[in-house]
Length: 492
Image (cartoon, rainbow, N blue to C red; front, top):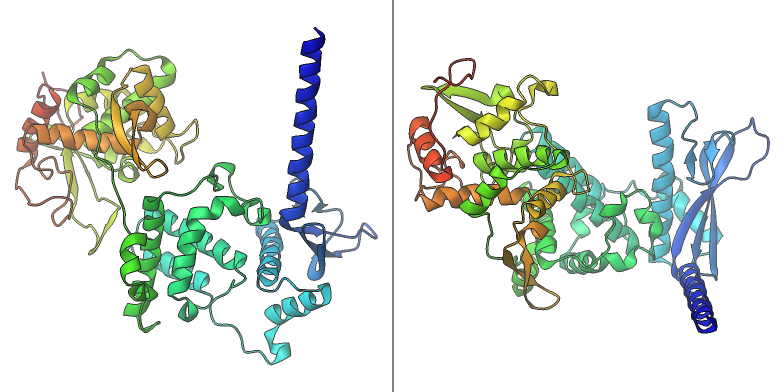
């Protein structure tokens, strides 16, 4: 008993030492900016003040012109109190001004770590009021211009909402990169090859900077905060989005030449994407999912996933389907829609038409008239959390014991790892499964209406009509053919 007590005491002491060292490390090596107020009379507005701390030895202060009533200030969140009665636009503007001032202070400090509080005040004032110092108004920052272009692409129909989200993420990452390097507000004509290469390194190692610059990540959803090194494919995808913006600027004569053109041989390595051998459900595995009796907690995801496999469409399109997307031709129901994903020549304008085979029909009709907005299915919202579609697909396949191992390349190990399909499944698996089942009956990807004419994903176009596609899809999925009337009721 004494030995056990001694071991417990040693363990508790070790934990205490670890916590002490961790906290000391955080105090000494984190750069933080805190907003606070000095309270006087409760009914009189006061200035919001800021304190930058970098370890134990650096303390810089800034008294801003942002005013707030002490009764409305939340010292913990450094914002308006959540329960205070304030108009939404005023609350948003105030809270945003606090975050912007913090970012400005971090950016100024990042470019000059020999600052005093007095010098910091001057530099902030110069940034906010350049006219007082005979400083010409700054050019539009690169990130501001990037956002303006992306918003314009969305409004013009060049990109869809899903694609815009990817651009928005890159803009936020680029903003953090510029702030941390003390070049926030950099105009686009000064962004060069070295910035691209440094941004690439930043994307890879950003997870190591989170504790150093916690203010930049305070407003982020916890699961979106970088926690590990990004893969080469992820980095390449982000750089391709940045490159698209630079190409647009070059085309519009905003810049003489894209800095990506100056990277040369390095470009191939930093933009290179590597893909694993595609994996999908075999026909046997798909049928196991279809016929498996599932608990109520998995019935929703089973219905949605099986129908997506039958349609083979991207998740962004799939979530938009309602009963208004269904038409009938010669007694055959089919889904029709305009895909939202952009192609190199612009947004696809050719409507895709995919027959609804009996497996999908039986599931869809269960929900007719039962869902808001005439939705086809009880879709899942965006995200991969426990309530998200991708997470639920993994749980479904695990329950159905779809555990076949597939190879995935590990950049860290520089060799293949083998994982069960259910561990890495996502909505993309539905599309891949559809394509494979169709190919197994020697159908060109166009045959099921999966791609529109001109898509780079296939080699040729076939002129099959709805009926021919329906016959081939029934063969691919092992379904019986059927017909419906104008009310979508099966005709016996």
